[in-house]
Length: 366
Image 1 (cartoon, rainbow, N blue to C red):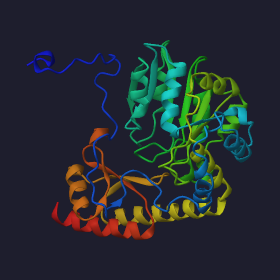
Image 2 (tube, one colour; image 1 turned 90 degrees about the horizontal axis):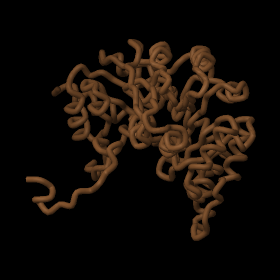
Image 3 (tube, one colour; image 1 turned 180 degrees about the vertical axis):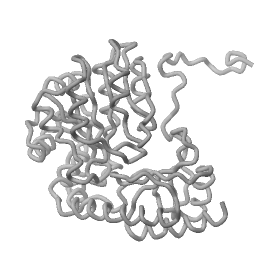
């Protein structure tokens, strides 16, 4: 029976949107008491400084936020040692990915990236009527810089490097990224997605502001959702050359970041002890969990993020189902077309203890 025959009105969806999958849009059916180690959330929570800022300004939400978010941008400018004109805010880093395609991508132009990685790179390209070009990761589960370089054509406009990569947690050497940027042809913008940069070892963190000052074709995406624990309030930002930021502001919605998000982010930045406590704790727990996985003869990819990607060598959907029954939620990787793998968020010690107990119970029966 056709849609017309069934009485359903045909909706004229754009061809570029037809076939896209919604991102986790189904109603969640998770046990309320379950430990959520499936979304890479910061289970240590936001800083007291952020909570205090939200409380202080909650009575002023009848007023529009500052469209430019200058208070937060100037605070970030001091943090990074760059002018505020080199920073743009967004409703999480996701919105900035969409904004990049809307600003720089003409129909038919190409967006390059490696998979598995964050799926919004592809969907944002398709929505803008661009052409996503996905290459496999290297055998060491890193973005393939040589492959990306060879895949560049006259239609290439944007290249994404997810560093650390989601879901593998792998990073690229800063010098390798710098060489890649130096060799990229003129007219191509490289987006370095650094959502998990706060969990990296210091010597592995790319000197993004130095590269921007050298006029290399790069933009950095950052978020307050991870290390700062503000995932529910949605605020991210990008660092780039002033002309790139100015172009993005011409397309960005005028009030894309709420006033509470702006104040919360400023409050979080002012509470460095909390940030340091959280990032140090997650790094310690990452080492502990990786050792525990090795002790259980499970293969994992050494991570520089707040999660670990594990190969169970069996159906990960079944692993996740049983883990859920045991009170712990982890992310199976069916959407990444790696059916035996799962991604596990690193939580506080008590959450990780519960994870290991649930994992032992699960592995006994599967």
